[in-house]
Length: 119
Image (cartoon, rainbow, N blue to C red; front, side, top):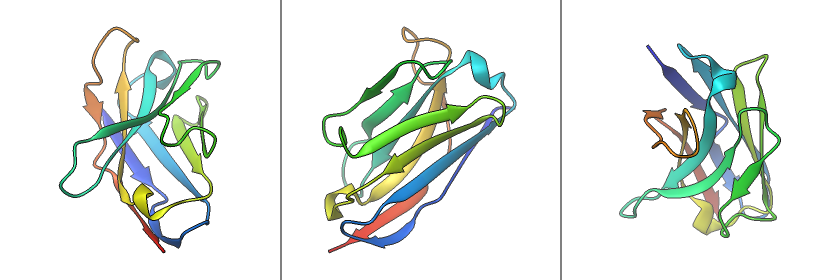
């Protein structure tokens, strides 16, 4: 079955950088559009960034644009999210997700990795 496993979260200070990873198995990784989402306690899950199958196209939410870089390594079945200048409001559980194309819904999800940014 499809498994998406996030890692790289932790407790950091405001202004720090962090790189999250999402390792995929059980699917042909290069055939999926991949995305990062986040959810803070008591808030709705929100889109962070997504990347095309080849990595040539990326989209970012305004809340992280200029501070985040999404990338993928199809040879390693892994996607990354590099975040810089972290703010306390970036504190959330970060989840990766996969969908077959830009029209379909994200229907494969990881469990997430917690990122906590202290001020």
